[in-house]
Image (cartoon, rainbow, N blue to C red; front, side, top):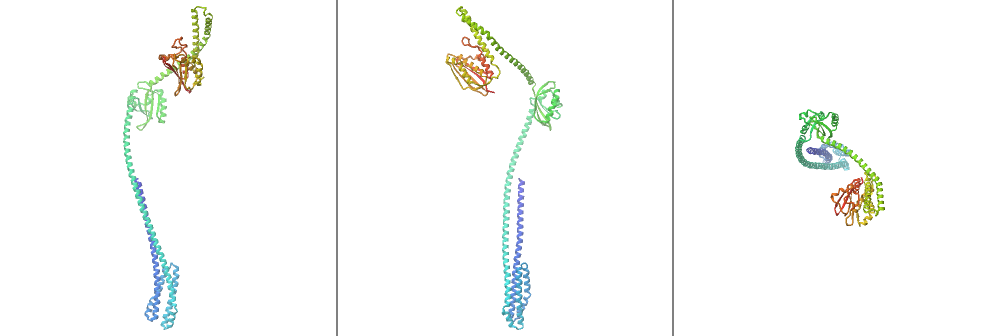
Length: 602
């Protein structure tokens, strides 16, 4: 800013000097022009004076001659003789003054001839007067010749004088214009210098104010910078202290090694305690010395790559050898740093030996679990095939037994004693129950795990079909079914129909003395649909909530409620096949609410 102000001052001074020089140049130029005009005016005045002198000499000469002729006094001739040499000299001086004006020269020549002619006439009159020829003198004077020549000369002298006076007037006016121009130029230059001085002074004042404000801002910035540097210095010191604390007091082993020599530069207390080497021993070693021999090639390859790529390195598949020979698995995190002017890396070591052992154990467990799962899957598949085959093959002899027992009951009813009829009834009832068990077991075995038959399913349409199936039971029990708005789902239509059929059938079967009220609805969640089927039946004791979904588990006597105990187990298997779960909430005597979920289309 100061340099800018000095530059502006210098520029203003230079402009002022140039303006003063311009004024001086103008003054000198105008002075020259004034001198020239003065000289011209003087020259014109000289011409007028000389013209008047010629006129005066000619008039005195003529007057002297006439006085002599009138008086005869020779004194007048003496004065005439004195004037004779003055006239040519005066004419010569007049010619010299008008040598630059050809028109004036011509007038002077004409005037000179007229004067010389007049002089010749006057000389002739003097001569005749000496000869006492007064008549001749009177003739010469009387004819007016002398008067005519002298008149012509006077006219010419007057013209010369008028021309010179006109020139004198023009030159005086020109001189006045020059003076006015000079004054105008001087005033303009003076005004320009004054304005320039004022502008320069104002700019300098503004710049000085700006410099003052800039200096104040600079001082304020310097103070802020000093404060910031002070804080940063304090923060840096605190950071260094924190770094030292984090490095040396860290519970994890840490060290710094040279990228070029691979030597340990710094080692913290945790590394010394963990590896068993002292600080001095570490500083005589390299990172190669704590590696198993079979890991050295990989180590050298990694070090070579890290010397080119200065980036954070992390790997948990390394092994270290402690001083006592123990080999441990470690996870290494290495960051590039500059330490005492050398390229180095700071390394954080995390012992993952137990984690590796746990992972290895977990891997063996997973392998064993996968093996057992495969065996269980094969066993389940075999069991399902066995159940299907067994139930299918058992139906034929059971059907034969049941048929012959029914024929025996029908043919010999009333012919045997009451005990025999009771035995036959038990046999027929057992065969029918065995047949129902086999049929339910067959249905249970048919609920597979594959999803080849999955597709879009309209659950509202399924409930409509189920309503038609149970129409007579619904009318007989005076039941009322309330169905909310149901969605379309992704699943096996046949199995979902069986699911809703079993759930609605149970609600109709296990009703209380009140007319059955069954409510069916759904709630949408993020990834699945949650259905519910609520009734006002006899309810279920909470201790049996899990038992009712186990195959062949019954809570009631077969004489009270018919069934095989497989229905809810089939429902559970269908729901699980559709990626969901099933559960119940109930209060004895108040009814039950069964919930199940079905995942949305993937």
